Amino acid sequence: MSQRRIRVMVAKPGLDGHDRGARVIARAFRDAGFEVVYTGLHQTPEEIVEAAIQEDVDMIGLSSLAGAHRFLFPRVMELLKERGVEDIVVCGGGIIPDDDIPKLKAMGVKEIFTPGTPLHKIVEWVKENVKPREA
Amino acid sequence: MSKAHKEIIQKVLEGDTRTVARLIRDIDDNIPGIRQVLKELYPYTGNAYVVGITGAPGVGKSTLVDQMILHLRKRGRTVGVLAVDPTSPFTGGAILGDRVRMQRHSMDKGVFIRSMATRGQFGGITQATRSAIDVLDATGKDYILVETVGVGQDEVDIVKTAHTTIVVVIPGMGDDIQAIKAGILEVGDIFVINKADREGADRTLMDLRMMLEMETDRTQRDDWKPPILKVQAVFDIGVSELLDTIEEHRQYLLRKYGDVKLRSNPARVKESLIQMLKDRLFESFLGKITKSGELDDTVLRISKGEIDPYSACDNLLKEHVV
Figure 1 (cartoon, each protein chain N blue to C red):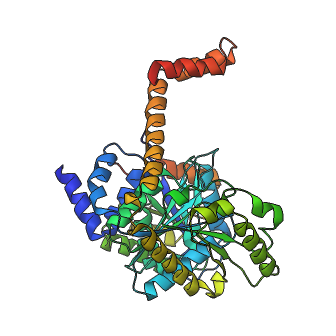
Figure 2 (cartoon, rainbow over the protein chains, first blue to last red; figure 1 turned 30 degrees about the horizontal axis):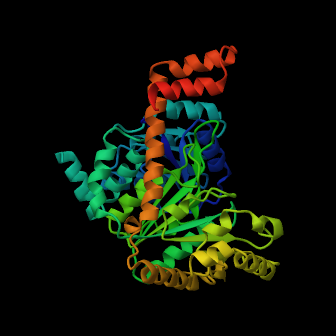
């Protein structure tokens, strides 16, 4: 009996040391029935992309609370393209000013969740927008 | 062999990361046709040395694996890692967090790390893990480290799959009665007392040594006396010695069997064949009675009190298996 499960990665890029949010999100994803790979703190975009490839995840959730998202998120997008794995959906969350959101989306980040977003909304969004890959 | 399969096999043999990663996912998800790929891959497997790392949750297995990777790389070896974490029996989801301790190796081309969930299987590792070992093996990795889920007592299937099994304990956990518990003591080829700077390490060492010496069965069965090592993985103390000890065990297996290939050991082959048969049989049987509606029917009849579960079982088996 074959059964595709959604596999996601929750990653903390950069020097940001706040991972409570990322852990809460990881937990919510688990409770939604996803397999969640958590990378831990202080990851370079290179490490995140390589890990995402090795783990064959369908989505990367980037958490940023330290203001470096405008450098780190685009770098992740760039690397995914370089490695030919743009099919991996990327979303982000954390302290991200409204003005930055359209810029990040223009670079291919599919959605940004700011503080106060209910967990179930995020889970619903993933279920709608992230499909486990075919064959 | 179909062209698509041929290409997959070729890329696996070249160690192409994405192909390997996807193949392991397909194994995990039991995608139709995956067995055909595994059949074709089998001739290229059997060369890696497989080390199992088991022990209760929180003893430091992931940290130990991380340091082992470091030392194996220093010795010029390539490494594949499979880290198994439990699936929630309620939601089917899983948090795979072993990687956190090993992420520093993710940019190293000589290392491939993959997290896997148990997906409701018992025994600490799953059939999918066994197949994933074969895949990493075919990529030419010298060593494959398999970190099992935090194993409690009798979930010790790793021994059937690994050349060397390491049991990790910490001071103050393996005391007295715990140490007598069957299973975990019999499976270790090497015992590691991690966090050995903690109080009680010597006591744990003594307890373990005593328990192991009382395993008369085992001392009569083989002449490998499981060494007990004190390690502080987080400070990289004792890890190099651990690798030396693994090498000693490998040499011992070589002397004893003349070959460390598990597949030429009939006892091991029997174990894994039975396991595979068990999985396949169960899968096809359950699939059949689910599809035909007999499963739901029978459940309903049992819950209405029309039939007892023993007879229901007999009936279903008579119909489809025996």
